[in-house]
Length: 135
Length: 139
Image 1 (cartoon, rainbow over the protein chains, first blue to last red):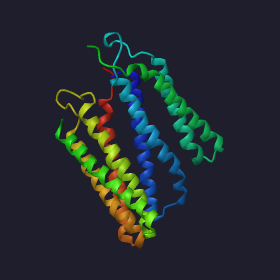
Image 2 (cartoon, rainbow over the protein chains, first blue to last red; image 1 turned 30 degrees about the horizontal axis):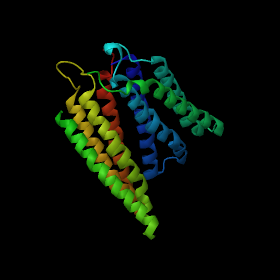
Image 3 (cartoon, one colour; image 1 turned 90 degrees about the horizontal axis):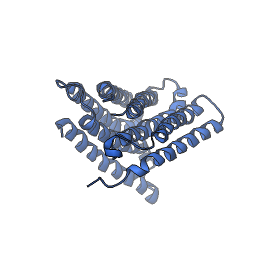
Image 4 (tube, rainbow over the protein chains, first blue to last red; image 1 turned 45 degrees about the horizontal axis):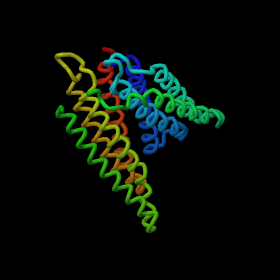
């Protein structure tokens, strides 16, 4: 497994553990009313699990498994994939934690722009790898 | 395909169908003015779809396809993985039952079941991470 896939998938696992923990806290709060402030984690819970976990895991597996170039020695435009890694994580943190920390709405907007940029960068990387296998 | 993967993926398929049927029920509530109490099924619908189907499918494929842990334990600690499967699905089923019941009755019993469901799902997530972490490594 290439280094970038290891980073993407392990980071996804961290978001998964944190997102699941936040979800557990909110569900317990719903049942026994610990402190309603826990609901401020809601946006982070959704962002961490949908983008930080599911999307990032898919990126990691795709980077690893999609067809390679030059007899299997090259994954093509790797800088674009690294850019996607940095942008998606900046985006998840900004969009997920912005509302919890009471930051201006513009912070969440910047987070979403980073996530969109990550999607674009990853598409630039992956597009040429989606092709028929050599005969 | 390992036995646990077959269980995870087939169980995920059951949640896939069940969650989308709940989605139909939620849409019918809006369309036909059915009981507003059915709105309590919304978080159940979403979690059965995203955890029961999507996440459990990921668990199944990851357990099967990710790099092997070692020759002796190719898929890590299988006992832990089976405990994860049991905990995740017990948690999901208890949640699907207790969350609407808690909304409808606020009885302490259902609050307790809801807490148990939360802890079961959470522990399943941690067991998955613990078992997979060392399988995610460079060749």
